Image 1 (cartoon, rainbow, N blue to C red):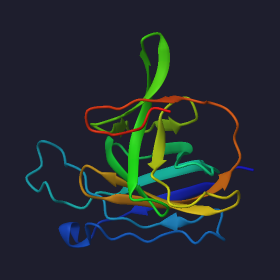
Image 2: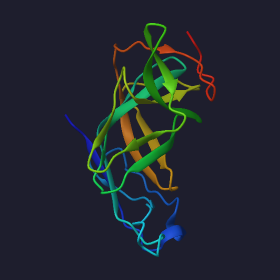
Image 3: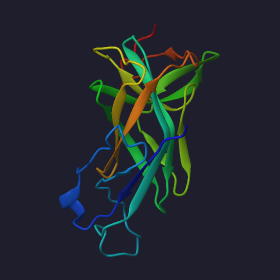
Image 4: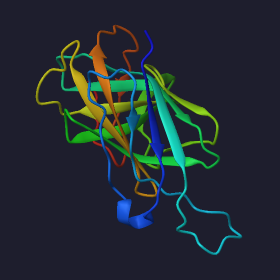
Length: 190
């Protein structure tokens, strides 16, 4: 079963609404999520702070259930706007230590590293978060993430806007990536 959550943001008050976010109750498999997100207006426009309608969606969101100190969050993010969306950070309801990760080739092996500059979802495209590829990393978990548990995740955009959704935890036995430490991250190596 696919779960799709959609975010629609219309800014009427510009900066006054920055940072306002509502979350999707876990009992609703598909619902609207409000956010305050701005984007640069056309270079020719004199009012750079004009409200911009932004729409982001996530399809099939999930988190890997685990009894270890770290896990990943996945799904397909869609940018249904005509402007790029630069994702710079992630937060979650299960830990204070969250990172945007990618897989890179290092010494002949695929390893996981932090995307220090974040990532961009181009207009009208999708950005896949998947095991063995780009994903959201949740680290220093204080408690296990149990199958069926709902995890709240929030992406932060470069412009200060946010996108929040609920992802259920489920089992997954693949993509056993290596963790390596980057300059900005202290990700442990098993």
